[in-house]
Image 1 (spheres, rainbow, N blue to C red):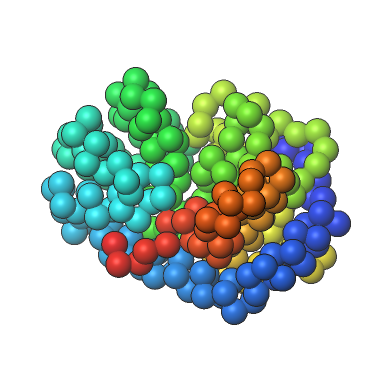
Image 2: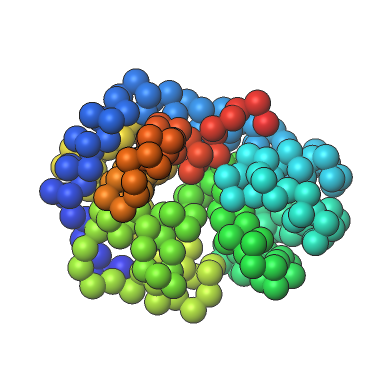
Length: 250
């Protein structure tokens, strides 16, 4: 229930000031617009009844997800297009409970657990597909939003207090916890006055990506040499990469 979770409003407001100084409202709105394009593309590609069960369509689907875009062919080689297509269809259109669908998807992609460089793909993929095909119904969850083993991510930078956020025993159950935490952040933002781009299904995505991108930039600048920092991607590019819209030509 996340009953002990509280939004750290002063920190959130400070993050918002820093984000607006480094990115600006027009850039934030542009990124939200790019997420709308991503959602429309995935929604069309993965529409029930017309989803093509072939490697080309699956490769296009994987190209929209930051964690999978550079690993598309490896994923398809390990899993096989048929297995992945069936897992996606059950995730999106099965009549089972949401948590069950997520756990079923994880089980279907269990072969990736034995390939360390592909394990991140298995983590992020189901939630990207759910969120961007039905953004008003499902929320985004990636490692940079909340990594349960380490207890890190953008959500932890905006909240405080005791919480059972990472205490769920299955990923399906944990996804429901993440949704409640994100709803809390979004509602508090409306009441207190912090928000990256205002209302809409992608405002919370942009806010969390910008918070995490700013955190990454700050840590890098403290730890790395000036030469390294000069070639670090600009913050808007980091946000776009995290959200999978850095190159919309995919």
